[in-house]
Image (tube, rainbow, N blue to C red; front, side, top):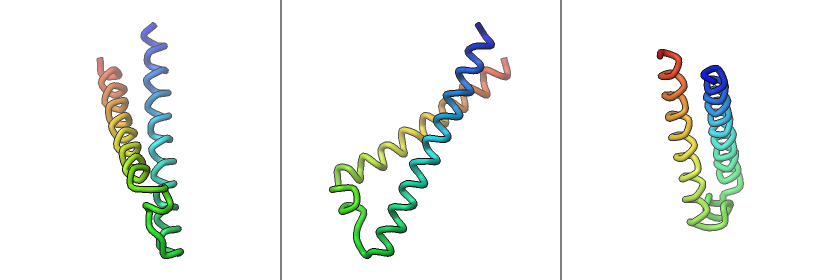
Length: 78
């Protein structure tokens, strides 16, 4: 059972890191598009609400990555 939990912790950690990297790349590409075409992030995302939700998504993924990493590395030391 302990071995199974270890694999689940690794899977959650890897998926959270991959998710935040994908979200950061999408935000980066949006920034490049905004810069090259002279528009604003509000227009690309469809308003202030969705722009704020993009930042909230990055924050939540960052917190998830940190928490899952802490849990993963603390469980390995026990």
